[in-house]
Length: 527
Ligand code: ACM
Image (cartoon, rainbow, N blue to C red; front, side, top):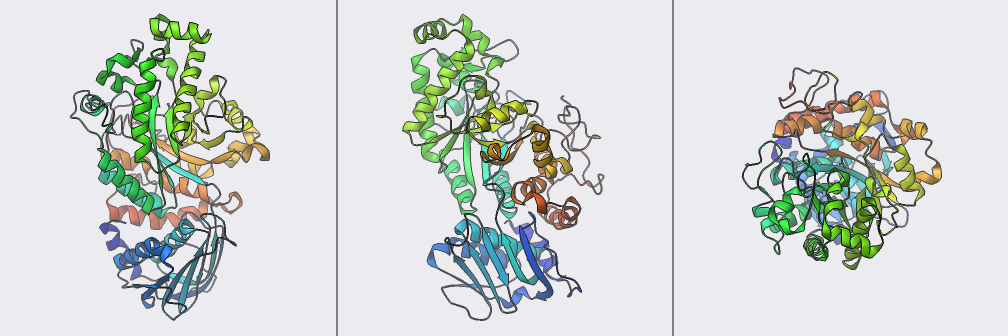
């Protein structure tokens, strides 16, 4: 976590609460599944050794660094055993599930046992959050996530945030046990990932952004991508790249117009040409470079809103002859043909395929492995994904698009029949499941949920912060905490610690306790 957290943590550590007459409630976000803490606080300063097996060296380093930032000097010792003053890290995959952990704090020892290294890491985050909130209490926390996919998506095509901001977001995601960073790297305004075989994608396609088509070129080099992927991995966050196709391709088409499939006056040069054989080898070679850069088993290939531009295919001789050759009669079928060709290419690379739920609008076989369902006004599309046996990540515009405003008094951002307030993010998904009559059988295919920050109106860091925070905390709790343990009132109590963290990091967050604290950052109003 960045240095500025240190200041807050130090200040907070000095205000370690006195013993309370009642059992201590957890101060952690997301709220753990099972908490049994006494009213007896213990001094974190007496824990001066982290003891662990070699396979947890990275987690031990993370803990020791975190404690040092909070003013606690701690050595790391391999399997130093059970001596007083030890924080003992261990893995027990026989008795604990993936990402699960158990933390026991006694007067002289802390023991964190995870079902795997990620579980240990989450136990460490619970320990650090408890320290940041004022102190440790003796007792036990047994915890495991509700969903395995707990994600945040950042669109860096419309506006480029840059790697320092991405690292900060990853730090904060990890602190709140979010584990998937979906990176939307290509779209109409700009192409943001270096592809060595096709250099113009960044040199030409990386120029401009949503606010200014002439803005200087911004993109990530492959070295920077690898650096971020490794950094995220050290935080147990998987980075999933999205290379959007066959729509949202205008930036790529500026660079290599020979693969342009056309668009409409409103969405110029929006599609790739799905009729040309060369398009398939071009995109396959791009995806091959992308696949080699990311550890994730998934690559997201978009597939959304193709109809914004695909009517142009009807007039394209290459597309027309491909459709005739393949016996396709509609442009939707041509879209389906394209998606299946690209998923075949990704399979050969050993990758799984993710796509937006628009892909369900044509007959889709299970070569697409996972669907991100975003069209909140089409719950039948969610049902179709689940009934079709697709692993599904829920990110419905309402309430999980963070480019929607979070208070009705805000003007910059989307508001469709209301906004996406903190409470709705927190409440998702159970009341919605009830309304849509999602069955237990269907629920088995839900991998998790994520929030998406589209960046048309995110032209500076204040706007990114204002839209992301504090909603990211509600997202984290909704994705982690068992439905029956969620309690919005208690969440707002624990949010006081989050606001202190945000202040110490200098984030320009929306403060619903005091809206004057950070007035809404200006920007154009869109609907
Ligand atoms: C999307 O919002 N077009 C996925």
